[in-house]
Length: 390
Image (cartoon, rainbow, N blue to C red):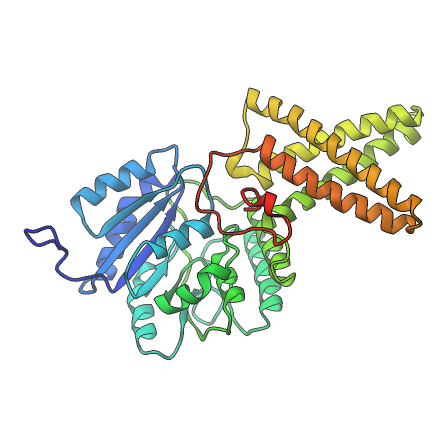
């Protein structure tokens, strides 16, 4: 409600953050359902859209014209559910903050009970849980359920806490917990809750409330291989005490794929087809570079993915960058070996330096992005990567 002077009559007690990408058709039914569930509670809905090509942000702004409880943040040149949620929560003054997906699979009718539980002061975060008594995954396909269960089990092992659904995308917390934790979060990938739980200085008090997942009726699911990879690398990142940024870990993982492909092609050409080793090695190197580029383009830098002719130009630049890194790798390894270092130490040092150089050059010259001023993460001893590690 707004008074004649344009000032909201009552400040929101609860902000419901809705990260979106290509969810235009779900916005109206979702906001109406939230408004019905929160009748009598001062609230606002913060829609954070990653510049969806289907006009999600425009639809949200049109709805906000008719309902001042709806706010819109449209993000350019970046994408990611975790960062969208954090930006949405930081953009509101509400003392209580909820995160809910835009696909209508979460049960918004649980929001009042979540808020009531938090306001009692017996917990710091309330999770809508699929995996405790009374909850469920609805009509999920068997494969999706198995993947979810496996991811949940791994997250529980890392957390070392009896939390039934640490990968839930439906939860509520108080402003204090966010303020104490936001700067410590990796803000990578889709599983923001486990990032929040792992980033807190002291383990937050958690309470889970059961709900049953609904089936998506409109739009398309965003779950893919990249989501699973992000979860694995987030857990690795946290397990290493944030020593390396998630994007660099994705880059290294892509390199392992390329390395395996290199050996396969080399063996096929040299051993299988009898091709001379130098020619087989050259062919395998070119094939591995192509695979590395394809994997990085679709996973490591998916929010900056190159398409069409830009992808071809990116491949050429990636091969050049990789060649420079390979030359440094060989030179460093040879020099260390000549100074008396063990062959494996020399090889590892050369590979490590070559990988860092490849990452830096690729980020700068292959998947460069428009300048930004909101970077907050860096490698402690590699300041020149400041604009690239996230």
